[in-house]
Image (cartoon, rainbow, N blue to C red):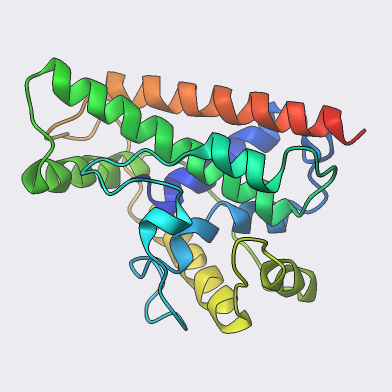
Length: 222
């Protein structure tokens, strides 16, 4: 799955190429950025010892497949469609699910094309390459804990996010940006399973779907 450095890079690109936060219907870039991490907070991998854990299938609207495909359309129907303006955390979470779906869908397609089966070994090789790709991205945005973010997180409609977990997730996201800047990779990494072309295609497709959705959302609340 895309790590938070990849999600952060998508947020920065959306804001940059989408005409800024207001053009996308976003009031708080900080809350939108944080929303792009939300589905991972209670899964138990990114945030160490959260106040509770929630099954990935629930947080990501996904099956338990080796390479799962989050159902971002279902999330949109349940929490965005027909509701007017919603929390920036919510639309950020939708973008997270889009990116996870697109990158995983592209992974499924690619490994099938080269005759590799989905397995634990394939997952490890895939994640190795995703980690390398993430370090090729020049990112700088870090979320900040604010009273508005804490309130928006507590009101997240699928499940409340506790302030302690908000603070822990913000700290993790900040460390990831620091590590990306410290360990930045120039040029093409030595990928094991995937390729530069794979990541270029997946990144473009995820951006296109997110941008189209955010523009649709913005048009609906004007």
